[in-house]
Structure formats: structure tokens, C-alpha cells
Image (cartoon, rainbow, N blue to C red; front, side, top):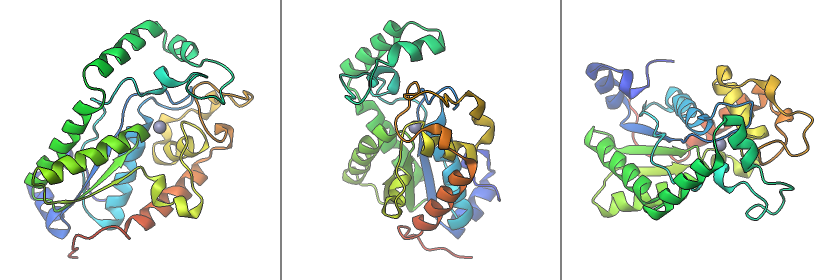
Length: 255
Ligand SMILES: [Zn+2]
């Protein structure tokens, strides 16, 4: 793979790549529990690595991932309890806080603070500004990947804000699995899908020996059991998403 990470490139390298295709990728992530077997940055790591695969196939350059500024009331650490998710048999929040070795009250306090100071508003503004900045750098099209699913709505709101504010780039917002949901793929939280993707894209960020293989309801995980994850399934899914992205791209490409 040639160089595609914008922040690592020299001006003349950027110019050459951008003149081949004026397409930028913006990965969005967060820091959130993804089971004992996955790195906490899974959403952003997955989105960034996926964008690098997109760039290798379709051209374009990958912007640095946004890991900060999301609504901290909308993370597993805060929401994963039976009153909110009725299928759960227990409150997972104390277990997660325990695994980190921090008091749940501190997380809860910060979630309340995030809600009181506007929830997702700051993130929307941050992403809208990123779209404007990307346009100012000479790009004509942006693919934004919302690795953390709750960021999808705010990222689409950011696109509206950007367009209303005079933005001229074509902007697409995808989660990733929504590119291939018509092929039967489904997203999950730290379960078979997400664990397989990270395992395929960033194997050093997964330790499958820590998967709670025997647990009926593994801690802080939602979806098909992660014991069925595999890097092979992840690679197959990545290949499908890479292939299907092409249907949405409109910026011209010169070889
Ligand atoms: Zn995730």
C-alpha cells in the first residue's frame, strides 16, 4: 500500500495523490469498552484501517481519526443495563468499571456533565469544521466512517450544518456495515462482527484468548457471540465493504 495517511505525508506527496483523486476519508471513533478481548479504541482503529483499505483500492487520502468530543453519556460504560436494554439479565456497568479499576460514579458524573453541556452538539460542530477544513485543503469529496454507531446521526447532522454553511464537497456518511447490509452483514458491539474486523485489520489490538468463550452473556458485548469471530470472516467483510464503496463515489479519478 502506498502512503495514504494525510498527517504522515509531505506536501508534494499529498499534492500528487490529491491530483489523482480529490477524495478524503474521515474516520470517527471513541474510547469505549469493547470486551476484554479488544482494544478500547476499536471503533476508531477499525474505521481508520478500513479507510486505508478504501484508499488503496479507490484512491484518496485518510485524515487522522477523531477520538474525542463525543457524547460521553452515549457509551457502553453508561448505557448497558437492563432498564435500557431489556434483553440483558444483569447490569454490566459495575463489571466494566471494575475491569478498568475505576469507580463507576466518576464515569456517571462525566456522562451527566456531557449531557448538561449539550450532549452531541460539540461533536457535530467539530465534524462540520473538519469537513470545511478538508475542503479548504483542496478535496472535493469526503467519505466519513462513523466507527462508533451513535456518531452516525451527529455526523449526518454535521454534514447538513456543513452544506448549509456553504460547504461544496460531496459528503458521504457510512458506518461500514451499512455498505453491505443488503448482503446480510450486520453490525454489533464487540461481538462477532466487530471483533473479526479488528482482528483482520489490526491483529495486534485483539487478544482472542481473553474472549469470554463460556459466558452466555459476555461483559459489555451485544450481538452474535465473539467466540465465533475470526480474522477470515473479518477479511471477507472488509473486502465486500471495499468493493461496495465504489458505487457511491463521484469524484473523477486520473491514473
Ligand atoms: Zn464498536
